[in-house]
Figure 1 (cartoon, rainbow, N blue to C red):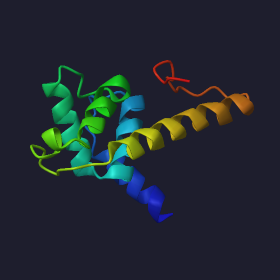
Figure 2 (cartoon, rainbow, N blue to C red):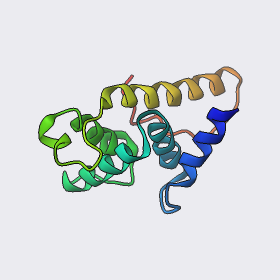
Figure 3 (cartoon, rainbow, N blue to C red):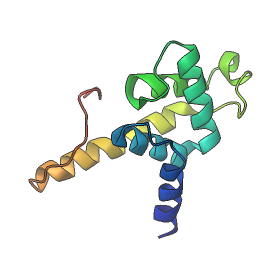
Figure 4 (cartoon, rainbow, N blue to C red):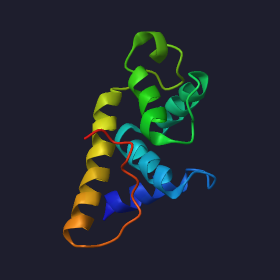
Length: 116
């Protein structure tokens, strides 16, 4: 119960202009790595010419960079083992899609950007 409340709080911290799908991904990443690291990754994504408002192939790529001293030393919240968070978000999104498919349910999850 507490985890669900915390996840909802992380989701509510994300601005409304983010798509519902990316808001979910950001909330999961924030839940796993911390909101500060998500902020750092979004800022770094923009600096790298990536979209700070899209998780897959954008903010997730920037989060991976925070494991490198070159980027972590300049980030407000510092070093982050981003590979764990990237895998966490991918696993949850893929499992959600698989469960929905198994139950013949239609859910709006965009997985075309996830490598299989």
